[in-house]
Length: 308
Image (cartoon, rainbow, N blue to C red; front, side, top):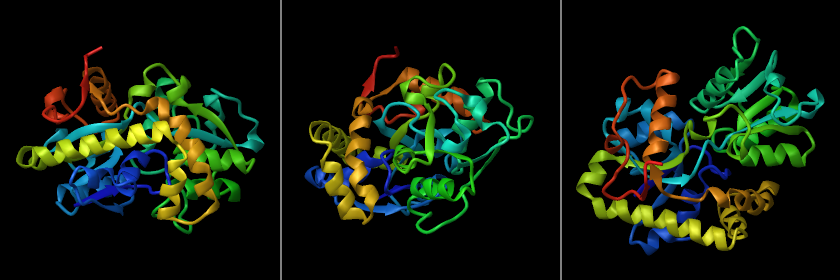
């Protein structure tokens, strides 16, 4: 079986990646091979076309290939909350929470990822067109197809962009190199109210797989939960996983980045979370209707929480 993620050296989808490397899928009887497909909409199209069996990526991006959630189901969360960071070059002197720092600037953001930034700015009263905020994909560089975040940090250092909206690894690299300042970390209270629930990192499969192979879907959910438990107890495992996947100085940063994600390691999906996800999707124009919870989440296998 194949599991696609859009970014390999990233904390965003690390639970799914680590579930393969730490053999938690194997422990559940699943032979899962990891593959990287970027950007995220292409990963979900591969799921739709049955080229892969699972996708570990942002929940809202499933709508790129499955309009109105038809044919796809979210199995579980890899983590709670919208997990991207707004980072600006240190030269601008931006401070934490200063969203106005984006005005007149070039902000790098991957396709579909940029929707979270655009909606966050809109709810903060910033109109990208009026205020001269140029949001676009980061100029391509070495490894950009596999490691968007690292490419974003490189582009910031080279000043081809003024800031980026990307994963925690990109933010960590930029801060460590002294070139970036974290302006918004939504999961820790920055940004307009409600931004936390725009989207989250999920594990998804086709409705057909859930219907025809519920035991497989349930095993995949257990593998993610086991990975959460393992990384919570020992975040240093992230370094071993990273070394098995790639070479580079960034691997040494993985343990600290993953350690900071541990408070958000909860594989459950609540009705309130899906309500907020659908509201965000309608606001950005990728969903037309108010789709029921049961049509979004694989309730037969997914760990769920009460509506609150």
